Length: 187
Image (cartoon, rainbow, N blue to C red; front, side, top):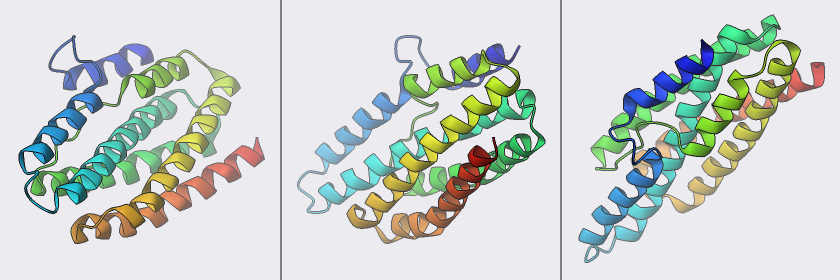
């Protein structure tokens, strides 16, 4: 049932079975947009913003999807509570990023990339304490990667609105990383 839910969540956003990796589509669309404005001196900055936005959206959507599975399958109440918080916080950030990207003419993926989809399918196949451990391991890895992504973007991104989003969101992501590290130590 859960695996079917994961598949349905991702397939709803997919326009074609040929292009299952919507992050690749978003990246190529943004590159084409940047290329068409190559005479503009800010096109390099637009590329940094688009690259960051696509990666952040990919990670954010994956966090929500993985956490929806965890709300259903986790056995530890603390893991379930963490998953619910991930859904709330990442849905909010995803919504803000989507609006910001639209205002900057940046195309975002409609679903997580194939790697994230495979991780969700693998997670959905687990149960009991094995599930809880696997979810915590994924959350640790994903949040470490996301903190690095946002910290790097603080240096690379030049757009003031995008930078404000990064500066507002990074402390929340760092808090998630600390929280999941605490859950891991408790296991």
